[in-house]
Length: 78
Image (cartoon, rainbow, N blue to C red; front, side, top):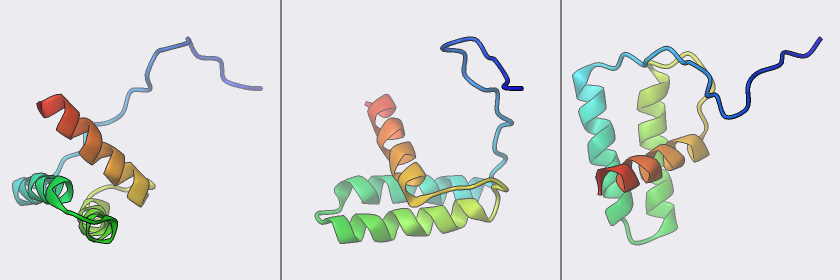
């Protein structure tokens, strides 16, 4: 039996508890990601951030997820 959910109601997720140094490094990586001039450098930065986050996140985390987080946080901060 399929689970029915209300449309446009987001799933509740447990907040991610990151050490402060990991959070700061993520923000630094986000800034470097947006300052990078080419796609290869951006992928390297996102991969580094992904590796750090995976150390504290039990779920599945793809490189595209990290890039999306960088983009959304960048847009929200402007």
